[in-house]
Length: 69
Image (cartoon, rainbow, N blue to C red; front, side):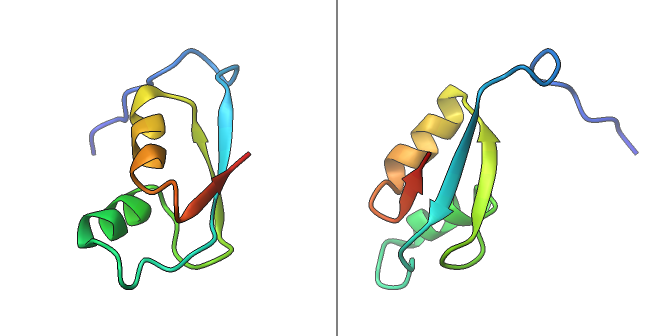
């Protein structure tokens, strides 16, 4: 298997806690794909992601469905 490339140095990168607070049903399917790609599975589920431009862009797409701490 191929090794994963490390994106940042060590564990000192800032992390964001993202929680799904609203269902993706009734919204654009692309938004559901973004929520899934963030690792969120169900309402109330939280994940911690690194604070990168890509993560910020995903949060912006689904800001009406998630909360960020």
